Length: 348
Image (cartoon, rainbow, N blue to C red; front, side, top):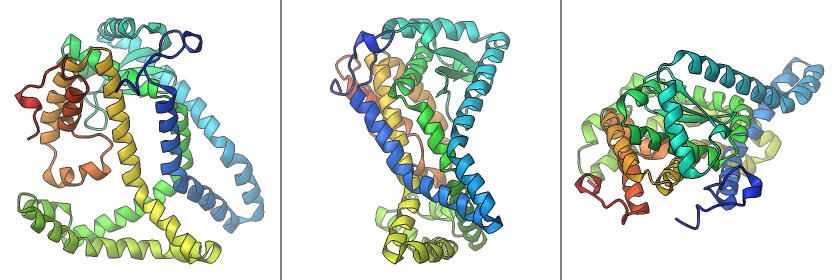
């Protein structure tokens, strides 16, 4: 724990930073590695499609595509800043969030003006999150978080989002997301085809979950293996054209490696995202909000339990967040002396 979180020199920031350079560098390398195949494929798609129109469009794409990310960053910062300003003037909860943030900044010994807190006027983000960090050093919580959480729990959420900011390179994540966009869209279309085929055949995740989820583990694994044959066939069929074109330019072994890397990316990205969540939780615990964070996670577990079984079945592989129970056990393990485990923190 202490090997990953410590102070850095005062000369580099307005206050001590709680995440080491090594951890931030690991996040940087992880983001680059897990998205590199999609970034390369996206550039290839952009220039390949441009070549179908004419050589002049290839030249335009070669000039515009590499610098388009800078424009996206600028627009994102401007939109986030405008949204934050509107929220500060319109949200009655803003003063409460500012006060909570001032307390967190004091504990972290950083200048509170380095980051801008504001309230997003929604119940949850993407149906589950109650806070997030953005470009431009903004720390955001939802209106429901202010209404539902206690004062200490609200500070724990803000401390967690501070952890995301301290993990760094949010601008790079935005750039990577933009430059891998065309390949992600292509992959989403392929997944949509697979889901549609599985739905028509009525052998999708819901079928597995309803019949096998509560059965013996060997039966579950056997059922998943059998049912996966049809979606797998659909994936192979939809990706055959891409593989054939790739083979022509790259050779069969390289093309197969590229396809496998692209297909494996969702799992790798999910694992990296989950690792970042644990890292942000670690910052909140180091700031002394471990017990309050456990309270937040207990509340989130109720929402998690309401997710249909078929979605929770594959959540450990593809979900961007670990389950609240897993995070809560990790919080207890980080500081068992200061926050002794209770019955509800034990593995189920």
